Length: 81
Length: 386
Ligand SMILES: Cc1cc2nc3c(=O)[nH]c(=O)nc-3n(C[C@H](O)[C@H](O)[C@H](O)COP(=O)(O)OP(=O)(O)OC[C@H]3O[C@@H](n4cnc5c(N)ncnc54)[C@H](O)[C@@H]3O)c2cc1C
Image (tube, rainbow over all chains, first blue to last red; front, side, top):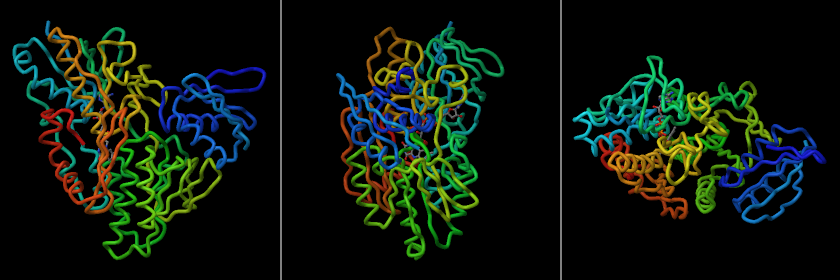
């Protein structure tokens, strides 16, 4: 996990892990973060694009979007509560 | 000096590797050219799939346990002690009685429930992850005259990904047979947005649960359990009340691999998913529940992996290049009622295509429970396991 100074962003590299790995890692990171923190999860599993927004909506966090990179996606979420 | 193969963990994977190698290397073992040693602190080998069936009276203690020594080939040495430290760089494994060296190491230390990850979990209710707990649950199910029976998954990954689904189906079937189903509400609670990790299987499970009036509660990640109020609380801010909770605890790897600094995230051993070598080492393998490879924590996976590792160690001992790769194969039954089951067979490249539930699969599962001892654990049919 690394931190970017401008906005507090925690990056979790879950590439190479398969469903439900990336979602479970995101959930763990949200649990360990403070309200307002942004978490960016890197996933090469295409299922993450479907599962992560569903979870953030239900859990009351903010889905900030997906950036497609070569072979993986960077999915951003803000902890809201 | 004999070549030494050291197997840490005499559960499903470790026992199959040791026995299968022992059959192939019989002459060399007798001549003292090779030594195979299995280390395990427990003198008993437990067939863990029985834990799910004991609560419903379908299996019994006597069918679930054998002595490890009696299962291992005579040519395999069994040391009833645990590894206390594993040093991969210096090729040594420490135990209370001394240090053991090796030429090839197989880590098969399994997974264990970790109740400490969820506050209140241990006191919350029941589970089927140890033999004693399976019997406690049997009593509780028998006493339960009605109310809300909740089976919930409190962390992924865990041993046997289909077990909580099977538990819900078995509970439905069990109370229907007793004429109590109208009084028992069965709830299945799962952290993901579908009732199983694999999409097409999840759809079948959802349809079957709907048809059997099993309530499916999704995206419920248990944060804590309140045993007094009998409530499960989720990270998503929801609460589920229960009268009887049957919970699948989060799991982690063996203490020794964590303390030795071998384990990565979650307590799992970083392992190459094809060669099954511990990352960075060509003389150390890891198999079964202990690894971090993306397959189910299932005895069948341990069995298929054991076949690959036994073959490749045999190759190396005989001067050949390793000749097998693990393709991610897993075979799992899903018992869908007392009397019916379906079967999932899949690998890294091919998702499962389960047939409709039927009696033949159920019957085979019950027969297999007996065959485990005489065939699978003996290493006689490596790679054909359940
Ligand atoms: C309820 C339930 C139902 C299941 N149903 C099925 C099923 O239907 N089909 C299926 O395929 N699988 C099923 N499984 C899963 C299956 O039992 C496991 O996946 C399988 O046992 C894994 O084998 P393993 O060798 O990796 O670990 P295990 O068989 O758990 O063996 C690990 C061994 O390592 C030993 N050990 C731990 N620490 C040390 C140490 N420090 N030194 C030496 N030894 C050590 C332990 O004592 C143990 O004997 C089920 C499991 C459960 C709990």
